[in-house]
Amino acid sequence: MRLLRSRLLRGVYERKLPGERVLAAELHTTRKTLGLALLQLETLGLVRRSERSGTFMVPLEERGRKPPGAFARLVLNVPISAAGHRDFWASPVIYGFQEAAHAHEVSLSLEYTTDVEQIVNTTIAQARLPRRVGVCLLGLPLETQHIVALAASGGPVVVAESHVEEAMVPCVTFDNIGAGQLAARHLVNLGHQRIALATYEELDSPSHRERLRGVESLLAQRGLELTTNKIIGSLESTEVLEEVMRRPTKVSAIVTGCARLAQDLLRFAMDCGRRVPQDLSVLALTGGTAQPRARVTGAAMDDIGLGRRAFEMLLDEELMANPRQVLIPVNLSDAGTTGPAPAD
Image (cartoon, rainbow, N blue to C red; front, side, top):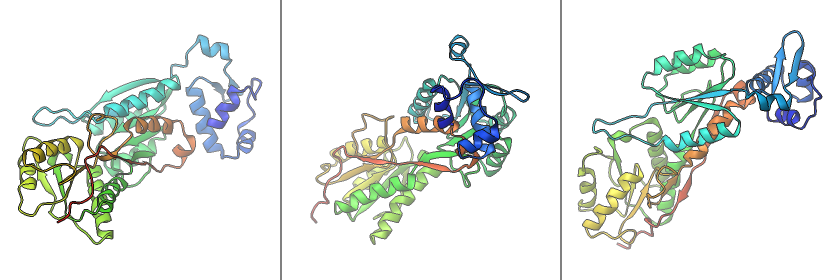
């Protein structure tokens, strides 16, 4: 679609576009892919199609006088724990999605839901609505039957930060296994061999489990394993931290499930007389634009970039025709909470 849109904006075509067979040959693509591109361009108000007359450019002055009114839907669930803590991890993703939509002059419809069945059915029913660019389902616990139904609907749908067994619709997520491997490699390269893991029960999700698997796989490659089993604690309990900090065999590094837990751990280390990073290295498996003040070394995830990418995928006709998983790479952000392993 990008090439065809560029031609339209540069005035390559006078008024009427060539027939679809000719146009597909010009662009070296299939008629199915071309049809998806023309549908998107019509949604954006750049062309007007007629079964009898063909496809025509919408004049620039007409576009300015009559905004296309195209819109995209972003649907997510924001979990709230029993203690009332709201998880705002999605906020920067929403911002990135909205920013990209605005750049394309597309309105955004934002919806929160915990009824996955209802939202899947609504998405299927509205698959061919006029002026709808598409739908992004963010962080929803989708089952295989949901993915199959969404794929059969034929409408532009992107799944973001959700565990999908098979990419029957385009999906985008962070490279979670890579994030875990990145964290573990950083510590091992600093000479750490006694590494513990601290995490919260509330963090148990497919993405989190992938990050943990990444940690364990990298350690296994280096002939190491976690010094302790996974230490699981409640968001409202400090027992997990007390257990780590006061055990007789001191670990030299602790990998935490999130930056918030890492900061709690830093305070406990200070209370126990452990210096960071001289005596103890602390690293978080998650962090990013949502936690700019975390000040903990960890895997930095570009949440805003993921939101932008999710929207751009809705406009990618080749991706819609050939669905696949898109992994967003993760970088290490060094905030000075890790250092060389202390001498025994």
